Length: 532
Image 1 (tube, rainbow, N blue to C red):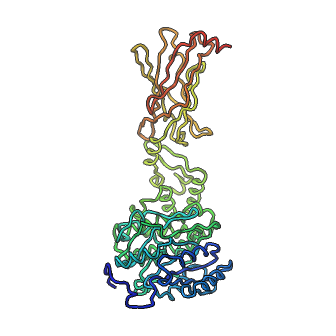
Image 2 (image 1 turned 30 degrees about the vertical axis):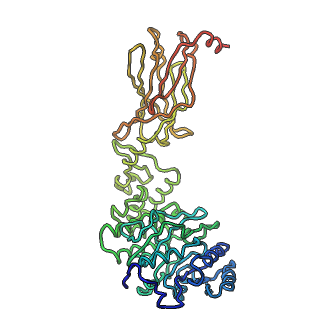
Image 3 (image 1 turned 45 degrees about the vertical axis):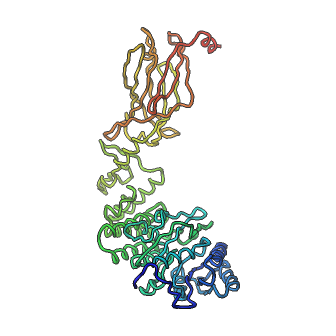
């Protein structure tokens, strides 16, 4: 088939052929079905240019009756077929596709709906550009997440290799029916979930031109309140089969190289990553073993550094463990992650995720699988300290700050020190004090004391002011960490046992990473007021 941009609509030579056949596979989608059908019969393109083919796949919630009601209201538009439940959307979609007569076919989920001008805009673009597939911007409803990567802008032509199209493999697109029939494209009926993705992926490989329209909200994908959408529910073994099918199809229809690995990256990031997510722990023992073996095989056969690029360190670790068949270790990693994550194990200038299987002598796994040095350095350097308390005690000025890094204590002892600069009458002295790091109810607390004997010397004038800067050191680096401003000025008289006159302590933050403390003698009247 040759696609000629701007060619005349096929209907010009075939009177009575609808511009669009809208295929709707229906199974227990009330009350969402009503809005779906309403959005179709009210399209701005007009009912004279469309047909709706709906197949009721054994619904038991009144969906069949609602289809018949709409068929009575729109007998020239809506064709309804009832059948026994098939266990998935593939069989009813194929049956409806076999009845479709339109120049184009659009698949719509029975719990979703279209924007008022969706069909008119999409058909116009397909006819004008000679497009085999048109993607209209899809948006989520009721908390349904839909990737917007491919909808950044309208584009006359995109391919699988240089766009985010692999991240948009649902069948909710406008397809030229000639493309579908020429290549015998149908939904794999042995897949109860993910059956639309092999269909869409092959169509994208075979299409002459694929167009993206981002100028309008064309398709509204609805998350049902009962969360039973087929695309939302988790059926691990069926998903594993569908995911394997996607990899096989990609390899069969593409040449080796970065383009193929780009599509594989999508499969690993979305489909494989979900199989080894938290829901893995909810599976039965036999399912866990089958998923472990299955994703391990996918890792051995299709993994490359580029294909795994978007996976987290934990996901890569889980794939390595699955590759070696270490099911118990996989479960240990996931349990640790569910419990707040593994501790950071610092060994010299390297950091490792301290999962239960790390340096397990029986498994003898490579340290490299657990290496999180790069991310740990980044997290450590990006932490922020917020002063929580400043008080004058009998031994010194005690300052407590909270770190935004909740596991700061895991980075080893003496990772933070206080650098102080004391000033008076042109004299300047720099000193350093160790800070204690410990976990507390609010995360990680850093506590250090500036000795009273140095801040208020018995001989000579007291230091007029001093500044404190926190310096964090770990993994071979010493980033200076900003200190957030204190909310109020702290003014505290000296302890009673100290022989000098009382002093006030004022705390300010002239710089993002500095505390500045000013000392002054308190007037007698203020001292008397304090004693009273």
